Picture 1 (cartoon, rainbow over the protein chains, first blue to last red):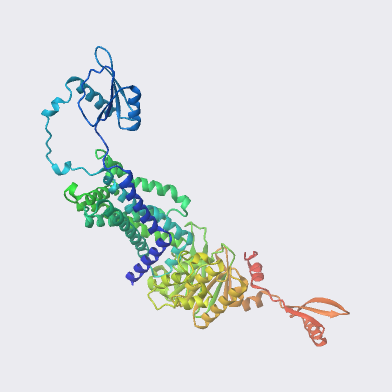
Picture 2 (picture 1 turned 180 degrees about the vertical axis):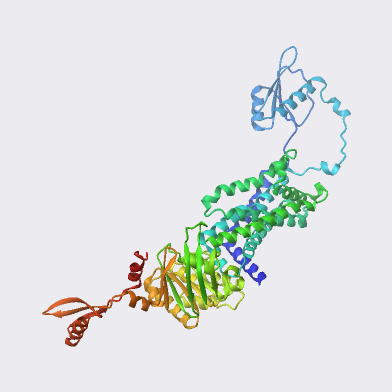
Length: 339
Length: 284
């Protein structure tokens, strides 16, 4: 009987999700992200120096390089800089000693400015000739393979949509049920809170997988570890939806819930900062269950880059998900009875 | 079928009781009306009896089950119709009934048949959000019958219905009583209570102030008066005659025999009159 009731709840929630355009939203967002990854975010961001030089003194012999443009006037230099926002201007003034003026776009970091100064100093001392004496060796050649920058964002998008999608939509769904007071009607049947909430969990698992299986093959083809990816999305979605179900019991309408919903989504998105800046991973961020989920998503998306997958990463979000689910069922029952 | 003994309930967990020491019994196949104004404790009592609120103090046995330990099987035996139209608005009437039917462990009614009984068969596949308030009320009412309950809890069953739909629902309630279903009817509508209930309880400020049959209450608290309108010397005269006074009875007989009477009405007290008399306040 329990299975029959769970199935009925799943069918009901899938119908409600379908009629609430949840599926359309997921497919649309997945395709939108694919377009964003393919056509907006570049594969690679130039992190080398690109210079445009106006040598008034005509005393420096610059090495030939695709990252170096020589111009004949300050106006031309400014024109080149306007064409490419990654370019830095260098003006060599005529005097006894070369007097260098560096022209920056304005948003360069101190680090970039210092590197530019060093590179220019090098040009004025011994040029690039010593480069011939430098060889580069790599201890871990696998690691040195670069993940294209646009694809690098895939685990973040999977976390935000496939996993955290449940946070926003489950709020909407739970509040709709509260407004309709259907929970009270449900409580006077033999149906259990657990069976009802499982319907929602499964709906958001399905939506999460739908998003994952649209976006990931489009971006990565067959390169991902799909078995591990499926498991990560299932556990991540289970945790996020269960947690959102707890929160949703405290609010009666969307306007009340909007702010806490956004705060919850932002809180769970905090590990993205550590993902983008791997050196920044304080304990507080590592304690957020979405942190291991994000790391596991990265491992699942780029198995060739990471080498092996760490199944233990999923244990913590799984335990937190189970605890959240249990608490959500207790609060659901209490809330529904209050009517 | 229902036994309630010294039941108390406080939402604030103090001496501010929503239900205070109420006791009553309901026999199998009886329609028991719980009559009182808003905030009197009717809904709280119904919530306790349906297991939605826990018992804080007292005892209640419903269909042989102590409701401090209700199980899933308890809900297979009861049906609850809420005053608020608490249905899934994005599902059709049929889908709503089908979903709730699948929650029960007993043989359930055919959703189409129930929709036909409440006059919703034409809109069975329309989403509930397109229904009028009365239609939603009928859908909730139909849903409460889906598991063929032995005990039926009805909260304001004809509220928001037009006279035709209300009559249809009242007929259905009477038919279910004939089938032996025990009905706990909560209302502040005295006409519904008078028409349907075998016995009524008046509840005010959490306490039951009276329990009896509507007829006994009228006899006990009403004055036996007859209002007559008759023609006398070409003019219409109106008079209230007491059936407790011999002179008035003789006068009434005389008027009947003379054939002058144009209208005649018995003036027994309504349940609302009795409620006001007993509690000093109205039902609304």
